[in-house]
Length: 345
Image (cartoon, rainbow, N blue to C red; front, side):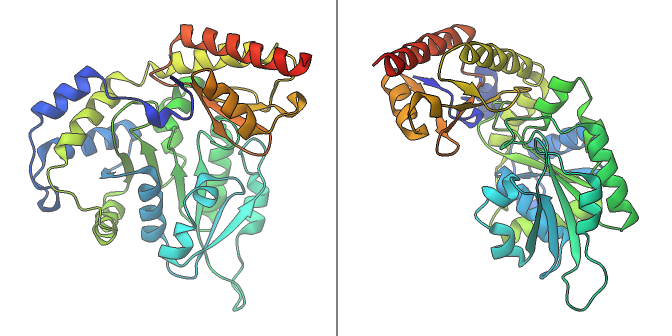
């Protein structure tokens, strides 16, 4: 099968498997796992932050950030299609007791003036604005890179109002590779950052949460409260170190394959690309074929291709470490056959 459902389906490299096998381990709750300690130091260094914390998933990292930044009944500003709002099970409301305040962005980017207007004034009727959340790359906007100047403008607004900024940077390294801007430059525009190790970077599990040391110390306690205090975590931290050292530059291959796929699909009658492709996510609209996304997905599956639904007629395809240029050509051939048959008959 050619698996384009997500970049979470990547398998660890041989170097990662060997690293896991040979990892020095200890009890991380006691701070004795030297391998995860090295990973946390490496992640903090790459992001230009004081400290970092290994967490089990991007969702856990984002929710720990919200819990650490906010008080119950605070309000958090975010883009209307942000992952933290759409895909994290209302966790910030369920766990932190906060209220989301959403702003419609353009390709995932919020207007700084609208962000400022959304900040609550001091009034007994209103919640306190406790946090502003950004997302880069923006998943629902098709893997869009949020411009650095947009992030900087929002950070300026936040600083003027003494409000922290958290970045859901699940695919932040994709943004850095696609834009040519060092990852720490994006991180500079935020107080805290979460990024995933288990997407395009190919590690088998985990994410990192980075920020000031005092913040990370408090976040570590929230991780424990959520059941995320791990023991011999070096077994999964070792592959993550390999991912950060060896798998960043190759993200450009995924971007190249995504653009190759998007360009080819755009030339097939009945197929429309919904967003300009900047990184490794392609959103395809199949309404002109007279198919729902689920019907199109089933036809692809019958041809040995896996994809995901992103709406009634929208299908998401995500290039990743396991997908080759030859696979892209195969997908284009199969989609062309499906479209031709549907339009002809």
